[in-house]
Amino acid sequence: MASSLHHPGQLIVLVGPSGVGKSTIARRLAERMDVKYIVSATTREKRPGDEDAKIYEYVTRDEFFKRLDADAYLEYAQVYGDYYGTPKHPAMDYLVAGQDVLVEIDMQGALQVRYQYPNALLVFVLPPDAQTLLQRLTDRGRDSADEIQKRFRVAKREVQMAKGSRAFDHMVINDTVERAVEEIIKTIKHKRSGGI
Ligand code: 5GP
Image (cartoon, rainbow, N blue to C red):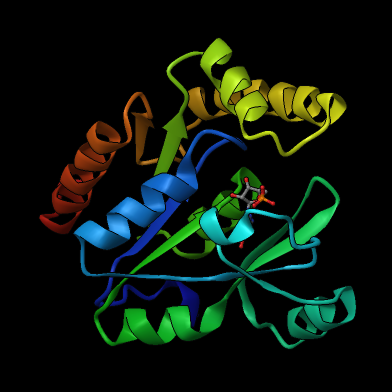
């Protein structure tokens, strides 16, 4: 099965609850390393400030499902009512060509990747503590009070699950972005040298 082949490039997956700061970490990693960041497709509405956060390709549900039928996603998930997917191409093309690839996805997507691409490096990003995460969700000023509570509840469960799971290769606390990025870079080097 092609998906279980080990590619010359490393697939790096950043996963973690909403609001934990994955996008910021991903951006810093892409500045620091020679890695291709893959833009996800989503059916969610574009929000003000999206350009400064994570970049998406915004598609209709019809288009999203057309691509799903055509097996165009490396993984996909429904998150808070909207669909998100990582396009297989160009991600696989880069990996086959020996380029490292970075994706930033939710927990459901990460578990699909774990199963389909056993050699992927899965890094789970944790908040320093629950209160800090709640504060970050609130400070984004993006969601309603209800939405914030919903995301907070899901986040707490995800953190609990992740801590008890062996699916992730590394857990990193996002206390400061620079420190977290350093730790992730070290983990990637460790993986490259066969340590994981
Ligand atoms: P947001 O809409 O706030 O940008 O993202 C909501 C959640 O969807 C985040 O946890 C984000 O990591 C996740 N997400 C973004 N892109 C993808 C993707 O391509 N696949 C999956 N499974 N989750 C994604």
